[in-house]
Length: 473
Image (cartoon, rainbow, N blue to C red; front, side, top):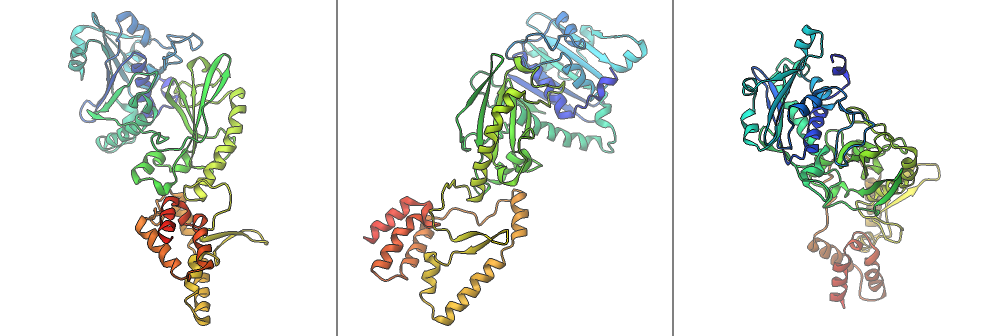
């Protein structure tokens, strides 16, 4: 029992493992409560189906169910170890009290007591014992449910000078983890029951890694059949960072940024297991950081995905990996287009850009202002030869003075570059009219008007340009 404490659970992964049991029990609410002073504890209460004494004793046994047994399709468990190993990775005393419509039972693992007896000494609690635990009143008010209480939080206190403050920070990470891992349960969707979760009575809001309401699904679902079970794959392409709010960037990137969060998101029974990896099919690059792929697997394929006890690692079987490999290249390439062209997918170079991207013969890339752009020509048309030379010098200085290193740092740190904003209708019309005023009525003006539909930035607003051209007629 002492050895299994070192399996490697983080606090957030341990709490998630307990919530798995709540969901499997049909809970619709899960309340996490922590008290970091005095006799500190962390408690998790759900309103699931509960257990009678025999079922509770079975649940407290190590490896009570073989991982090879067939499980209910909605079961989030695997090895029959999670409740014990997750809990005792954080504390030395685990108490579980469960209520059904007709019974109330409690059992406790106390590692110090087990050490004294030298036996598998599971304490069975009587009714007087049960009433002394935190949140017991809330459990008794439910028709059925289960209360898990962690006490003697030695692992959580280890190395901490101010445990109260550190506990608050740790629970913030728990909130973020739960919001992400169970976001589909928090939102509710077809095939699963919506579950409301809270920490110290503060509701946990879902953290959708795909911004489903705003993201662009670039490919249809693909179904991969493996040993008679379906694996569903759904690729997403996130909006360009210039179109995201700071809150959305924080949601999508967390502490590690968009680059580290790209890749596959593996769900087992709609619970997130692994995310932010391409499984070595490609590298995590800046230009592919908008690409994310949701993969739904059933628990019937656990043995092929080499799922670990913590449910934090999973490796796709060869049959799935082969199908995913072809998808990786396509979605990464489309992410690169979105990133390069400020969120607009362009498949040709028919448009007239204000900046030209040039590949040098000697190697490397440089950017130059398009001297043939109508806006540049409109300015040059008002200048004499001396003014034209000054304009050329100005454009050259702008090109050579591009703060490329600073831009790279800002973009790779997912900073929202403020000048990457949409044009307003007034700004666009004023710019177009000022440009056209430089061309006299005649063939040259008509030629410029026709090119507006393929000229940046006007080409991004076809309805507005059609209105302008109609007014011109």
